[in-house]
Image (cartoon, rainbow, N blue to C red):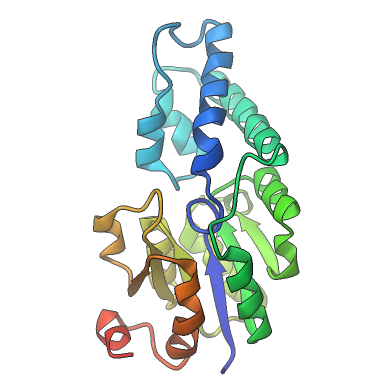
Length: 234
């Protein structure tokens, strides 16, 4: 196989964020209730969060706490991060089925693997540490490392650092697809927990399970990311 790289999203692509999302968000809003910063009888906005899953956290809190101050949003952000990490370390999260198998296969076949996520560095480090992802992943990148908070720019920084000439971005949301397209890479959409069909429709190809990459990787490494028509002939 000629030199090829894959840049994975983390949440909703490799890591089943849904396993810890609801409990961590509920704990965070319970904390806000204890500070009289959220109504006692007002439910946590979990469905709103699901709808915007994948955007950087500053945008999350602007959406979930539109009438609160920046100080309150930052406090919620800190508590949420601490809660997420605690739940990861308690083993409440999980990788998607086949993740370790696929990452090992890619490494064995000379594919360089990276992670580009809108998650914060401490959160990503907890997942990598808990599941030993650094055995297969060259480096994990956080949106915190990019001033623009634009995932396309984050992917571009990976390409420039490692001299990537051919590769793919694998993710479940539109930000992943656009990041691939903006950088001349294949956009592989994952029809997983947070995915939306109208967003996946813009990907070059869509998978229902990570194990599909074991077959696809040999085919797309010989093709150009010029759309579904080429991929559809493989």
